[in-house]
Image (cartoon, rainbow, N blue to C red; front, side, top):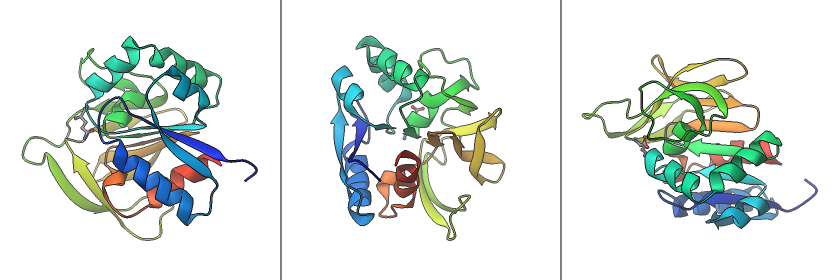
Length: 200
Ligand code: GLN
């Protein structure tokens, strides 16, 4: 790698500091020079090399983005093809091109060729952990799900990386990574390392 990498975690709402810690540990463990910082405004978006959209409430996060003008700036960086993004849980919802239900309260960034359903696992299973197999990982990964969405279908260039039964829970399209679980809530850094490999 030739330069220092700057990775921003969108900090308007949700599980932010855990991502900061996980990504900081990932840089350290991989001997990557760089910094991880809170993205609070348009200027922060402009100076980041990659963005993490955390879990939280996709309605709240996307509406705040829209109202404060960050949405437009992120869209421009996406259109210019220079902003890798990892969306986890609510972040996965925001990356989708379509929602399965008519829910126009979420302002989708419409980046990835996938349709997402919110709160897909039902009330009885609002939060749970499960060992999953991820494409390209040699060992199972313990994934934490909290009122998680699922990816109902993918098309075009979007590729499935993990499933639980028939439900798609992780997908990648070019420099965009979507997962319905919370990789920042475990000590396992493999998902953050995977995203880092997509950036550097
Ligand atoms: N259910 C939330 C939503 O759709 C996501 C939950 C989470 O990020 N843990 O916004």
